[in-house]
Length: 180
Image (cartoon, rainbow, N blue to C red; front, side, top):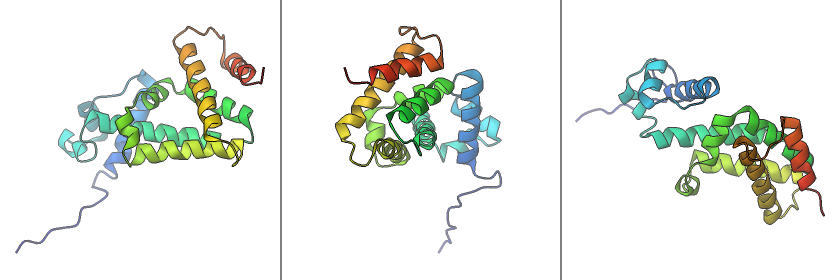
């Protein structure tokens, strides 16, 4: 009979998954890119095999990063009291974290559909938006606001929507959001 030891959440290197995500976030902010799993393992001080215990593929890493991004966006939106606060928080977050925002918005339907960190983080973000708009806000209204924000930020980021600054983009989106 062999004894099996319980799986540990932390290792002598500490919480490898958290350290890897922290390093990947730093890299995204500094270089505008997501490091490879091998480079990330080296930065954390573990073998790439050890890192694969936490992220079995690049997509798993990207999903975890996107989940962190949605949590951070939810934190920014939380406490908002109205649509203007949501617009301000969303635009400022997206423009100050362009690589992370891009990662969040390019995850596959499969990633969002699976129960897990990404799906839960996205749900928390939508809950924060609902909290700012009011509990009686309809799903369609939340979706319309999200689509407008995502579209404006994406067009701005691609240089198609030529708003000269973050505040100009916020004013533009706020003007679009007013009833005609």
